[in-house]
Image (tube, rainbow, N blue to C red; front, side):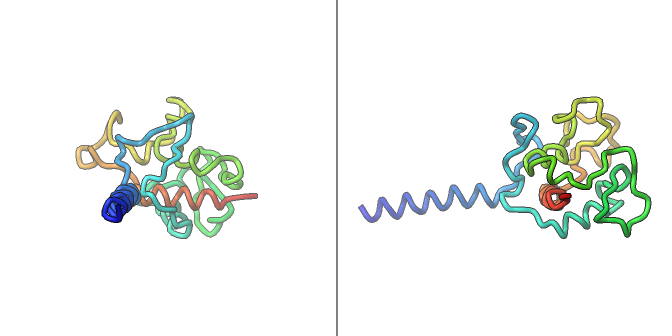
Length: 152
């Protein structure tokens, strides 16, 4: 009996550990009613890193379209996308994750916001970027954690 219990415990640990340790690939992301309830990395994002990624003009370039008071020290906030102050009160983390991963799944094809964690079905992608996401799974989770802190 003890051997069976140890085997079951080890199998449970292995299964749960692999789920946490694995990263959800772009093609495996599951949207559920305009949300992605499962973390892409299995761990919470870091809002401080998310703030850095959000402000980084060489990554997603979020500030080119969006403004928020938390980054007032940064120049050239965009006015194309929604103002993000209070966005953490408006959307859940699962909804924010879906918007960052692929906003067209949430808002439809009319939105100009790019898909930051998608590799297929994209238009006019330079060869050197084909098959690559704009943000990594960890960066998506960090940005989601940061956006969740933007509350009124």
